[in-house]
Image (cartoon, rainbow, N blue to C red; front, side, top):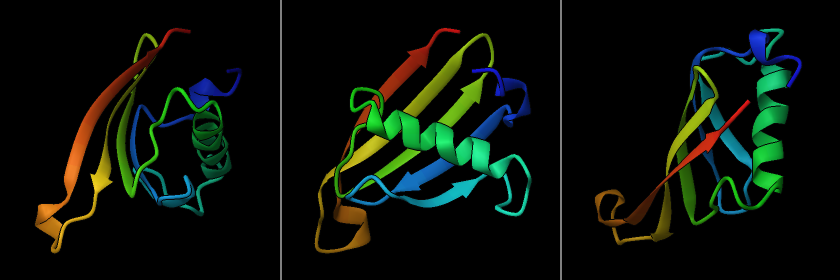
Length: 95
């Protein structure tokens, strides 16, 4: 990850049920670093074992002595926003 120094030390993102990016917080989409962050997220999704995909996926990412991903995946949509069923997951990528 040669561009790791360009990535914000913390950001959050949300994915839809197809693994497509809904939103990224912590970096503006007009920031020149945004495409690097976006391609990093896409790579994690495509690896299939780093980011779990459900009805919705929400992740927080910290970069410090590696990459830490703390996420949750919606495994079942409820009748209302507060009745969704979520499972948590964590990943660590050593650099």
